[in-house]
Image 1: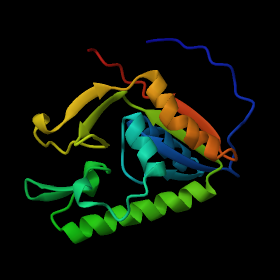
Image 2: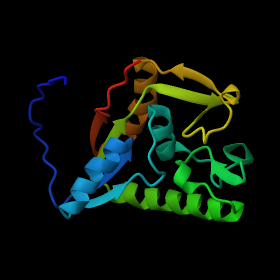
Image 3: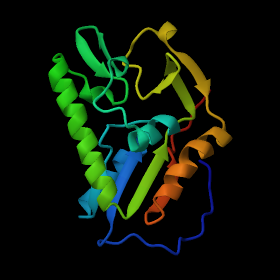
Image 4: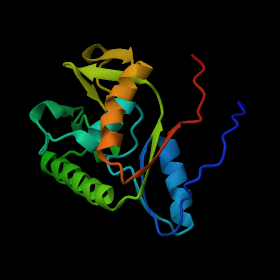
Length: 181
């Protein structure tokens, strides 16, 4: 266990807030707690995502509808490289419908959000053809380049996003799961 002393924020979250939670399974779990206590929440419209670049892409990606390079067929399933595996489907049209619905859901939630909680699960990213993917969908490892984002890269990706939405209260967290390696 690592003890971290964090002073209490002056900004408090209340029932009047609309909370958008994005990121790792920690965002899912915290979001569920908020929902259980009747807070207005939207939790991970693109599914659980772990790296800072992929989470940021959900807020900035204008490549809709999804391009052919963002959709792959593997082991009888269609996969979006921008979404969690829960979106994968045997029918390409259904995958595209679900992905478009997630984009609309995120767009609505982002407009209404007063508080955005972002939880990074890892700084490791996987790139395919030079683009960071949100999920490898158990494709062969040799199709990806794995690298660790630097703090400077993460800040460079997120600073413009945060600055473009000054009316939002941003909370950044990291997943509390320890990585042994």
